[in-house]
Image (tube, rainbow, N blue to C red; front, side):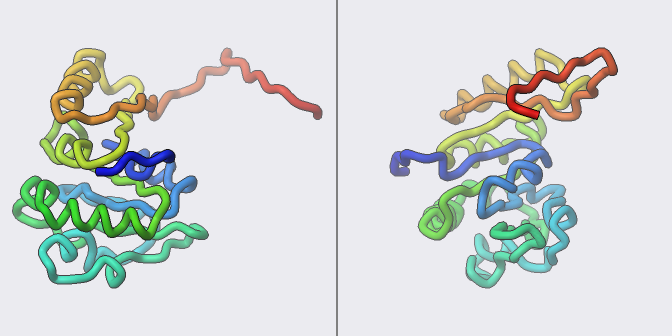
Length: 179
């Protein structure tokens, strides 16, 4: 995969990806085990990534415009019996190359790293990976293990995002600027 001066494809192992897409023109729901992005963005999931990977549809025909300006979603589509095999296929690599020609940035939502190999497979095909950690749920050993699995997959780990952090009333907010 060619080097790019800007981040082009990022794998996120969480539904947090749906919040981050506001900065990106395309999101792909590659969580073929429990897809949810179509609910979040109010689009149909009848056709999607699965159809493209099984040659039952073209990317241009299954990408959906969302209610968010300039944001399109490639929903998962039908849940296949063989998600890891499809994500590791030549068709997936070709689809990513094709999408990369059309979009500056692509956010890919995946299942959790520790649950199945899907995130590791996709991380190896992408320019960067962000590990999403749920505050109060994910323990440090799980984070270390997830990082180790991503490293073994030759993922370029860009960092981590702490999700679901509760702010207590004693927290202070600082800002700069004129008011």
